[in-house]
Image (cartoon, rainbow, N blue to C red; front, side, top):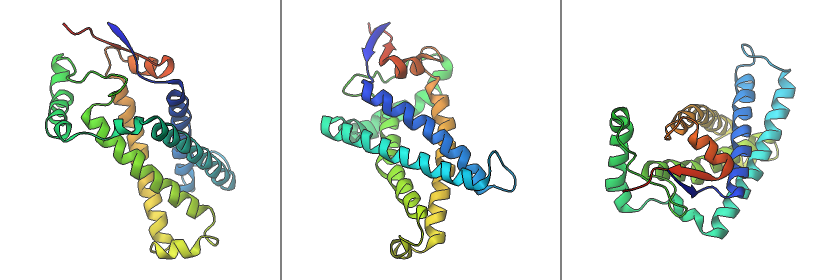
Length: 206
């Protein structure tokens, strides 16, 4: 095995803050949405907690965006045409078939290209579109009266709330999928270890 330094310290700090906060947002969001069936703390406390964690996630996202833009690493989220046409097909075949036969992963990450084509497409959509939309709708719902004009422009409170809730369900599902995919390294904990130390272990190419 060879070791590749994939995850700089600022990225790791962002990742774990983001991961913990998203889980907390999902749990508190479940209580808020299903208050009659799921009760951990009083509803008002759950709402206040949800709002505070949402602000932390927003600031954490700003940290991520600033770091990736000013270091030029934001390019790692944009797949090339070749990756979309050929790399994505190879990766789909690997996840759907090859991995169960013990075939090697067709993608090998490097510090300048650490995401496979499917990851690039997914993360680009999530980080550059869905997360900002969730943050925006969350801030609008923080103070409905103050942002009434913007909310009405977007279609009303029901539209804004529905978008926020649908994205909540998406991110809850994404946590499960992300956790599963993170276990698909050369050992089930390899990717988790890499996100702690920064060093990813990769098979030597012959």
